Amino acid sequence: MYQGWIFTLVIAYFKKIYRVEAACKDEGLTHDERKARRDEQSMPVVDEMFRWIHELHPRLVPKSPLFVATRYALNQEALWRRCFTEGRFEIDNGEVERQHKRVAVGRKNYLFAGSDKGAERLAVVYTVLGSCHMQGVDPLAWTTDPVLAWDGDLDEPLRGSRSRRRLRSERRRGEGRK
Image 1: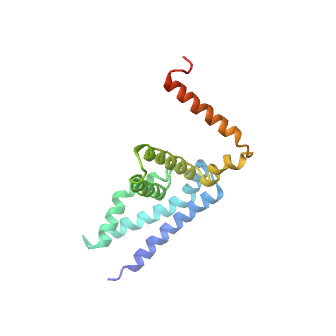
Image 2: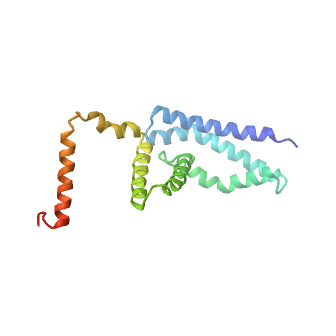
Image 3: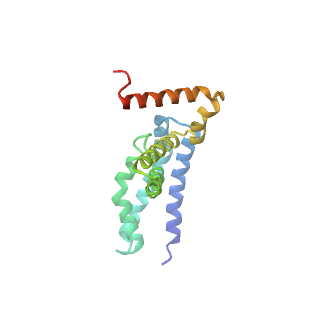
């Protein structure tokens, strides 16, 4: 039996839910406002979808792909509903998955960092830029802002670095302040 209509129906439920989430983000709602919007618009859709799954599941052929999918949905129902109980929870973990991908790519890049210290510095840079991204800050703008604000006087930054170098060498020789 062709069951394409079932998948179309499930996708329609999810589209409704994701439209509500997108509207919440576009409108910049607070967590409390997003929770209220979910209660009003998303929860009726979630309730209807799971009511339908509860009715459909017992009529399916055991071990069929659709039976397995509906069993999975029923087993995950309580956990999935949990994300609708708080406005601060996301309804999926897409952002976390993307962050994991960056870590995996970074892991491969660390092999070519040149040294252990280079890899540590690279990890710090990835952390700072990843934090910028997660906070909605443009990493390029954040890193170039000090450069653009610099007035072009070469003596000032060099004077500071020269004195730090001198202090380090004096400390190594034991000439520094005690």
